[in-house]
Length: 411
Image (tube, rainbow, N blue to C red; front, side, top):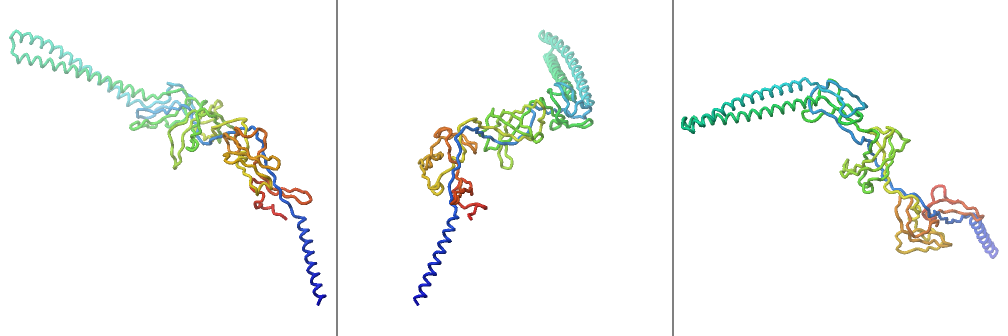
């Protein structure tokens, strides 16, 4: 019985030894996880804020040419892209009816003048008759009734002359109106420019009863264009007159055009519950590449600071934790609104900083840390074998002890 007990003890001892050897061998292959800090230097950088929008290329000055009279288009003297001068005849309407109206007005004027002459002759007679009867009445040679009759005839003649003169004046105005309408049948260019659009053809009837029909659209100067861009209400507060602008058009995708903000219009436009404001941008066009109606993709530079001291914005978002710094000490600053972190020996040290503008990736540093200092932007985790080989398994701003992604499992 004693021999059996002794053998069991040795068996248990052997099992313990085997387990210890296996544990030792496994522990010899275990990788140790280390912490590495990602840093960036406090250095000058260009910080730019922009607003993006879309717009349409338009001429700075364009005039819609119409007609104030109705009629048939008898002749067109220009076409699309025709270069015209101010006062140049560009179209004519049929003048037959307008000429007849002018002739009728002139005939009415002659009749009115004849009526005036007749009334003036009658007035001359009635004036002499009234004076004669007045003298006789004063001498008691005629009755009062005869005197009053002569006076009445004189006053009627005066009124007839006045009425005839008014008729002559009215007839003269009708002649002027008919002459003006006749002149409207000859369409001239109001400005020097180029014809952008033509809305009628020869033989077409245009009616000006309720509105002025459009015949042509003329642009004054295609070498000086503008972009009218629609800027969202969330961005319009940053847009100011004089700010630099670049834009592209699909017609020339490899070209970038430049301009400046010329006008920020106060009138809002609401489309599908989206509020936008029109911003007018200069667009020099000496080579005539920009054509009216092209869609422009616009970038407005609302803030531009070149060579300002800055750090990556993620340095301001980094916050060390005891679990993530691998046993290093942390020296924090209480109640610091903005701070960055540096490594000083075995300590992660916070620095209170004053910041300026940011473009999202970089933030301006006004004070609080010197140029050239290296600030922590994140943490990378790495593993090392007992034989000294280092293998980086992940790189992240998060804790090195966080779950690893695919391909980073420990063996």
